[in-house]
Length: 229
Image 1 (tube, helix red, strand yellow):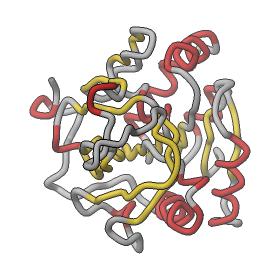
Image 2 (cartoon, helix red, strand yellow):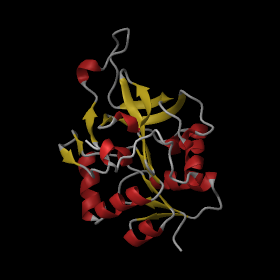
Image 3 (spheres, helix red, strand yellow):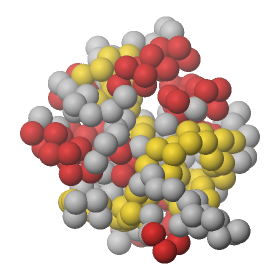
């Protein structure tokens, strides 16, 4: 019998904070931080956190032999990606011209310098760092008990451009709308850090602990042909 939740350890990411937050919201649940393929694939659900740069992230994933394991987990289990764990699910990142896992259709782009000013003309900093509103695009079990436009904590210089708009579960303004959460089949992945987002983040992690991996019928089925590039 596998662990209830496996947090994937590929040498990058705020793993202790993520695991401790999960243990806080679900003290009876067994959470393991691991890079062991068998442990990951036998777990009931999987969390894929990450921070840092896409080239480093992919290099570590490949060096540890975890690419196929992550892809398989993302196809078969309730799966939560966080920050870099969102971005590298897509096909390509501008950061270091990096081929990524290709689980989801789309690419990762840097916030463009020419667009980074607010309505008053003031420059906006990159990375996008701090609290910002998350606007829920469609209903999803992972948003249960979380108010529309709730604030979550972000740290990133790149954002996802989803290859299919149906998978966009939430967006955030900085200064234009960018994808801050995606939902496809059993995958839910977020650009923000729920483990650093106080009550709202803990609510989202609590929802993940009980989510069965199903989504509303009108949402994207990534692995069917109508949802591919």
